[in-house]
Amino acid sequence: FLPHLVASMEEVEQTYIMIKPDGVQRGLVGEIISKFERKGFKLTGLKLFQCPKELAEEHYKDLQSKPFFPKLIDYITSGPVVCMGWEGVGVVASARKLIGATNPLNAEPGTIRGDLAVQTGRNVVHGSDSPDNGKHEIALWFKEDELCAWAAVQEPWLME
Ligand code: UDP
Ligand code: MG
Image (cartoon, rainbow, N blue to C red; front, side, top):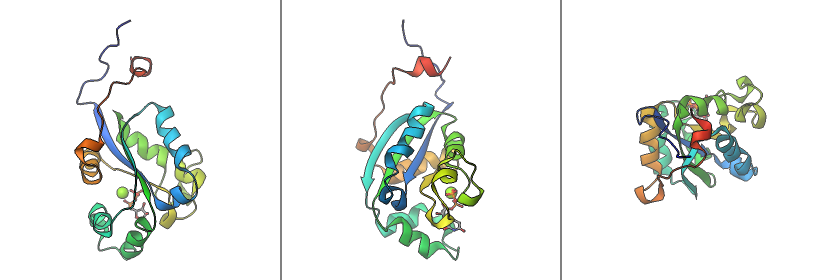
């Protein structure tokens, strides 16, 4: 049968998900990507990347007055990260739920941070906190030719 257009363009959101250096070092990349794939979201960009200090500072600029900011920048630049763009209806809030609370001690079992992390300063993964920030962060971390718009054949089986 013919795949139909299931979601209006306004419903479809983009979020920037990043596996932080501890997640890469601990060999959690596949497990984390699987969570988003299996949920039914669509990957639009993916790269392993050594983040320069300036980009880490720009990404976290809203937190620059916080006492933990220098340590946060050291952490994010301490090794390669995995940068991802994910697309879908409700993907921003849904990804935040999959990721769990900022402090892993408060993150529910079943979430990435709840299952795989202990401390806020080593909480394995980042996810955008709003649809606007999702778009903004994807544009910050990816060049245009690193992103792919593609049709997922599973879509009619995920969305009615
Ligand atoms: N962070 C930290 N100490 C804190 C709060 C935050 O080291 O007390 C770090 C932590 O890595 C967190 C990131 O700063 O993921 C961004 O903080 P935010 O409040 O935006 O949390 P998130 O959106 O990542 O859950
Ligand atoms: Mg945040």
